[in-house]
Amino acid sequence: MLKLHKVRKQVIAKAVAVLDSYAVDPAIQEKLAHLLDEQPGRELYRANPRLLATHLRLPEREMLQILVIALKEGIVTLNWEIECPACHGLDFRPKHLSDLRSLHTCPACNHVHKTDADEQVRVTFSIDERLRKLEPEADDPEFRTRMDRRYGVVSGHRMLTLQAFRDLFPRETIPPNESLLIRRVAILFTDLAGSTALYSRRGDSRAYDLVRKHFDLLFQLVNEHNGVVVKTIGDAVMGAFTTPVDALRAAIAMHQQIVLLNQQLSLPSEDQLILKIGIDVGPCISVTLNDRPDYFGITVNTAARVQATNQGNNIAVTEALMQDTSVEKVLQSCTWQRRDQLLKGLATPVVVHYLFPN
Ligand SMILES: [Zn+2]
Image: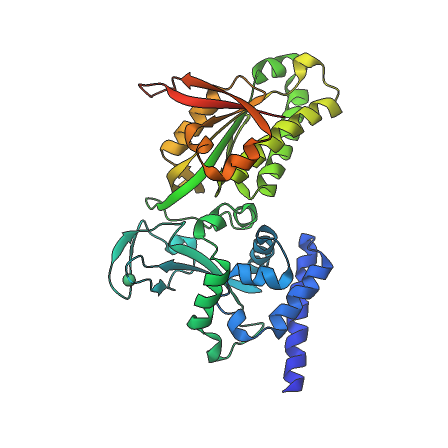
């Protein structure tokens, strides 16, 4: 038995060492290897990522990033579980995002419902059986329920807004013609003011060099604030966040960092980058468009149109975002102007707030 355990320890240590090539801190690798080897089986079977995060003392985003890398390297497997809104039973069948459908039928009670990626779909991770074969008692639903109550679950939607998942599994998408219901997403659009003039003044390659630096900065800030870059359209970026407060914090950081970038590059005033940001929050659907995960619906259109009303150097947000109590504290660091704006495609004006971070 002891000898077997020694072999297991070595197998796990060897597998985890691969995380070196992803620049994962060696101290975290060591803790992860220890966790996978020593923790009781029930903590490694359909494990709530938040429980693992407390073991490794990592923020949720970092834990999820490491789990996604571990998934890529065959150290863990990912489960997409669907909770039935009628009987609260869990459907363990979906193995991939592509196994999810717009409508879900509960295998226990046959209830049919729209698949809600926020409230019903959750993700868990299990250790790959090639590293450690778990005993049958590891399947302990009562323990998992207790942990879910204590820590809260990680939703399918959170996984969709994890940049590392999108980067490492670009082919993991829901099937074409299917969609997932997203109860609440914050959509952020950015664009550069006067970029056509910038290109003509600086020439394509020098202007693009500047635009690329701005992309690198925005991508990093979206990721740091728990969001995902859905796509770029010309010089524009579309980002998605599970919470409005993350989107707003990202927007404020973008606003501040672009000012710094202009200073660092000592750009003449006419060549300075002017960022136009717009955010809305609300429901939408998650779809696959051009083989890539995308969002669709009024919230997406509103965010884009609110952004289009922005003249630059501020953050345009909708009334829905301002009314969200979670952003109250962040708003304390801003002043703002309220304006009635007619948005493209809408018959009546809507209220748009233009925020100026201090
Ligand atoms: Zn059911």
